[in-house]
Image (cartoon, rainbow, N blue to C red; front, side, top):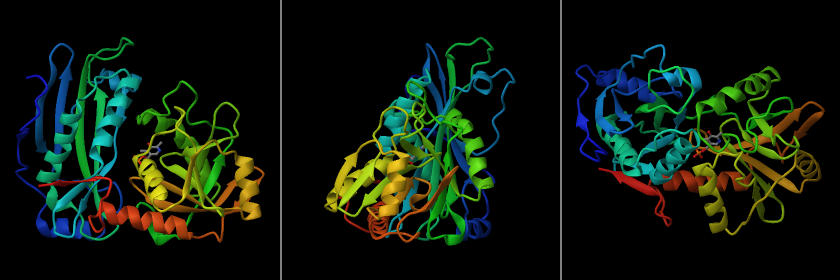
Length: 364
Ligand SMILES: *Cc1c(COP(=O)(O)O)cnc(C)c1O
């Protein structure tokens, strides 16, 4: 079979989680710790193409110890959410953007590029199978995790000829627990996340592996998240381990670092650029240095800083610390622009507000 678009073979889980247990999970899902009854699996082999597309009971994957993805980290992923709409149906937010980014990540990692139609149908098929797993509460959603690894059994170093693509789903509540008004971030001055020519713009597990020591340092310093500077000059603010940044000024401007290849092109970032312009803000994609950040926060010219991504949506940054650095932003809590952008985005995602940009796709 080559490039099957639909329908996927569907094998229903013979022993799904019982409804009472599921309801208990959905009432307080946490993040990334509970999973639905099904998953999607598609295989790829060079010369044959994509084959064996199915929705099947969620379960372990048996791997040969010489599976090349375990050794050379040809691995990529996506993160997206299915939302419960007011009429009780399910909706995806800009899924075509995830499909395109998944292909771009595959290309950078020299992996097979899953056709967009197959990506989109895989996500829809899983949402249909597990639609009862979308948590109803505002602030909650069904987090979808498409991912792919090199499955060829071979220890030679080269792009693999076989890949395994899967989608799993996990009911998710707010990413940051405890309802803290704003997060604090630690500036990594010893570790870089991404360098020019590297893999910073690809959504690959390796980027996260490289960021974890800095994230651990940030926790040890009493902060919530780490922010990375550019690898060349250690001066320009890039992004957090898994979220993009925006800076809000007192003169109606909002600034975010440009996509130079070392920053992950967030779909939330792109959406906020559009919504900010809709709200009449002057939007700028430009390099912003750590010393400017500190000076602008001290002078009050910088009013707000926000971090954004699918998992945590829009989160205010209240304080920044590092070696020889310690400054507060605004009043240390959520600012007006951050709250307005967040509310607008969430209302569109949940189908509670008009969708002028055609971002929301219903799954029937
Ligand atoms: C996924 C991710 C983001 C956010 O992207 P969204 O599409 O908004 O979820 C930002 N930075 C990194 C490093 C990421 O992996």
